[in-house]
Amino acid sequence: MVTLLVILFIGCAILAIIIGGLPDFFETIRSKEVLFAFRLSLITSTISSILVMLFALPAAYTLTRIRIPGSRLCELLIELTLSLPYLLLGLSLLIIFSSPAGKWLKSMGFQVVFAPAGIVMAHVLVNLSYAIRMIKTAFADSDERLEYIARTLGASRFRSFTTILLPMCKKNLISTFILTWSRAMGEFGGTLMLVGITRMKTETLPGSIYLSISTGNPKAAMSTAMLMLFLSAAAMLLSHLTENSGQNRIRKAM
Image 1 (cartoon, one colour):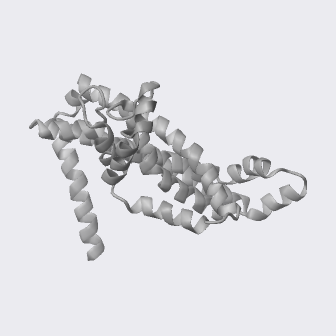
Image 2 (cartoon, rainbow, N blue to C red):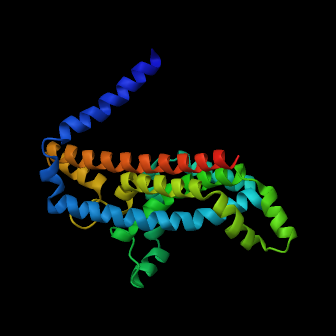
Image 3 (spheres, rainbow, N blue to C red):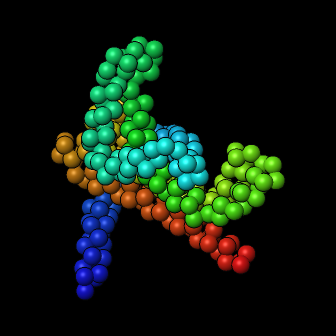
């Protein structure tokens, strides 16, 4: 009974978006503002997801394969970041990049506050801990003995990482990237705090929904929400297909 109520509750929420967004969907997604927001979201989410993976891979490897002092503290900090409100994370970035060091970076041509680069920074901070946690789980579940054998045969730690561990966890890593990208597409709190929402400048898809509601245009907001719903569903489907493909290969190998 409880399960049925949960499914009905979630289903009604999704159905409300579809019903509210469908009538003006095609007209809204062709508007210059929504197309701009879509392009900006696509670019910033892709760049930030690549950066997140570049940072998360060595961090997760270090925490699962190398004994370092304070590793438990590092894991606690990662868990803490996962539990913090995104607005707070955005505020922390605002404080950092409004400091003398941040102003110096701005004078050197790297502007973050109220600039598209800040969207990428917000996405990275919001998603980095999530990606580290996902990759840590994948590395921890992999067979470490294969890496040990490779190192006894003369392979360096880096070589065993790139030729053994990464291929073993390839499906999980692809799934992590897809889910990180999807989370970045929907991120709003950190971006709002760091760069604000300026039309046709720092306007992402969530920002476009916010502006539409603020200006009394709920139809455009619902249509944009429906677009985000489709993007999220596509990302989730691709992630599941990737995971299932990896599991099927494991079963065939066994």
